[in-house]
Length: 207
Image 1 (tube, rainbow, N blue to C red):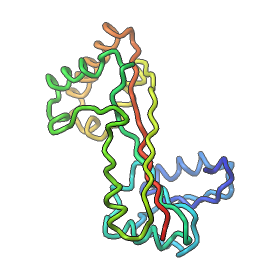
Image 2 (tube, helix red, strand yellow; image 1 turned 45 degrees about the horizontal axis):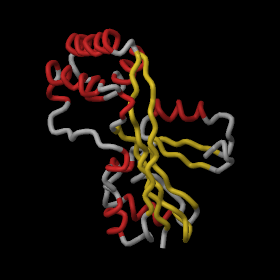
Image 3 (cartoon, rainbow, N blue to C red; image 1 turned 120 degrees about the vertical axis):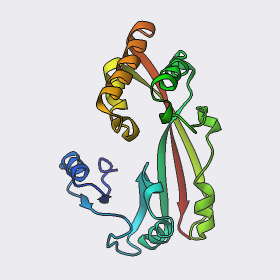
């Protein structure tokens, strides 16, 4: 959005992440980042063409998010939250079936209650009903964008290290778990795997 020349008012909960965002946007004087919550932020009413959120909208208080977004938008402005999710891809060579066995053996609590991976076209439109029930927006358009992302062993372990439920494992147990995944990747998949992703985008205009 910044590269396209849009004026941006971004709200980031964490000071560290806000600092990273400011550095990334340093070349775009029309982009501003403030620290705080969407719920408590002082947002001008009827001033914005778009309210969007990247894989974070579900953290915003449901009694506040749609009302505040609608108030911030000009008539006809759009709410467009989106999420990225892990999906099944035939390009993974069966890796995620095999790595599930590592989870089951070493950290079974991390996958308890999780659902099997779906193909992109099978993803449920989870947010559509909530947006419609708010009564503040028109028809909801849903878009799915799928892609395959390649990972080396080192890059995939680095990715896992960003997951909060993986990070909170005891150090020794986490390292043993990561070593087992790395061994699987290196011995069976030549140190390279492919992970499927999809972005689910919901777009609804303020009525």
